[in-house]
Length: 113
Image 1 (cartoon, one colour):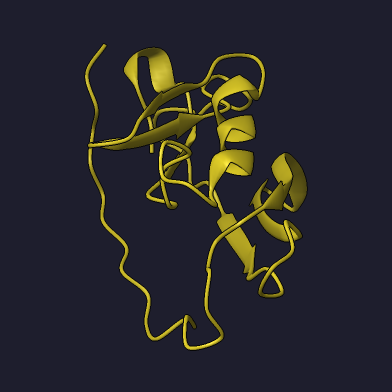
Image 2 (cartoon, rainbow, N blue to C red; image 1 turned 180 degrees about the vertical axis):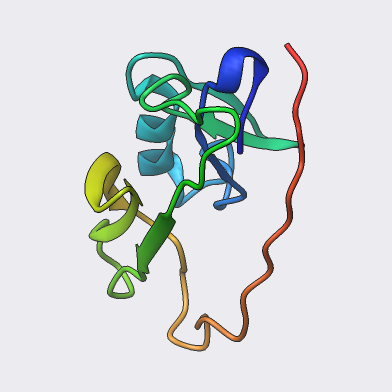
C-alpha cells in the first residue's frame, strides 16, 4: 500500500497479537522505519521502507510462509524492484493444521495520512 508522498508499506491482516496464542505477531508493530498495528483494522508494517515514484512502474512481490503448527516460524516478506525491503520472521499465522492458504486478494488503495 502507499501513503502520502509515495511512502510504501506492507499492510497485513495477520491474526492479532491480542488473541492468546498469537502474541508473537506483535513484532509486526515495530518494523522500521514506522509500523502501526490495529487489531481491528489491520497492520501498517514498515511504512517508508520504500517509496513509489509517480509516473513510473514499480514491481512489487510478496511471500508468505505459514508457520508450523505450535511454532512461531511464519514469515512475511515484501520485495520492491527485486530487493527485499520488509521481512518479518517468527510469526504465528495459523493455530491448526487446517489453516492453509486458500486464495489471494489484492487491492489498490491510496491511503491517507
